[in-house]
Length: 160
Image (tube, rainbow, N blue to C red):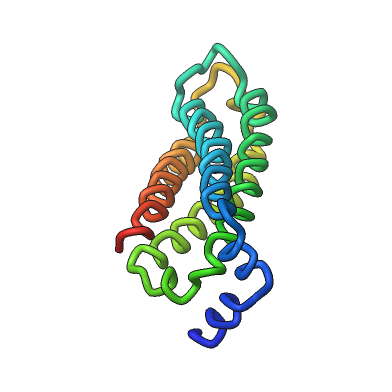
């Protein structure tokens, strides 16, 4: 894998990030905005799945507005994350928190896939005043836990 990481470190994008004044801190700032747009709306949606706001707004209404923002945030965070990874790929890949961050992102993605392919298909039955099924509660807890873990592991990349 070191050969792959070394190759990544020598790409034109890695060199641009490394050699352009203030580009890395700008990427970090935009990355944080992307994380906020990803995790904030997702957390609010998860809380709705856990019953907060039941009777106030529909699950589908929350999904239509909040999850679109989360998708935008994911694209921003993923794009800037890759750009920040490239210049120091070997160093970052050796950090103890790197596999945790990647693993938690994969778990979060799998959770989203399972939720939307299975649980959310029956949303008409529990969209308004009915409590969401246990599977929706579980998806919300997994989502809240994994995205929190991703944020923590991401910060630990600078230290561990």
